[in-house]
Length: 160
Image (tube, rainbow, N blue to C red):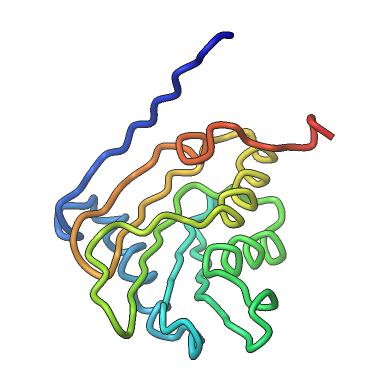
């Protein structure tokens, strides 16, 4: 038997105020769209803001449904919208923030597994990494230089 070790590395920022100015703006847009999330069931609101290589910013918030599997996470709302409106653009950076209506979220909230898989499709397709910044409602922000850092064993078309 052989064992392998996988390590991941994140940059940690203490607050929004210490982020680079462009990322502060992106995260603030994610915070604003988070407030518009449709989350009557989970009471857990997520906002995502994507910066494209053409300079456009695309936003998404989670959209729930009484038939739970029919809802969609903020990250996928944003990435699918970017893919539909700007199919030739590359995703450069993504900011994600989450807040609960019932409990304070002070820890960084990463994308769920389904969102990681969806984002991996775009990172592989565009052949360049996507910087991902994520936070709770307040507190530290984690930065991942690539989705590969969050999903080291990416499933893609080459495995089909």
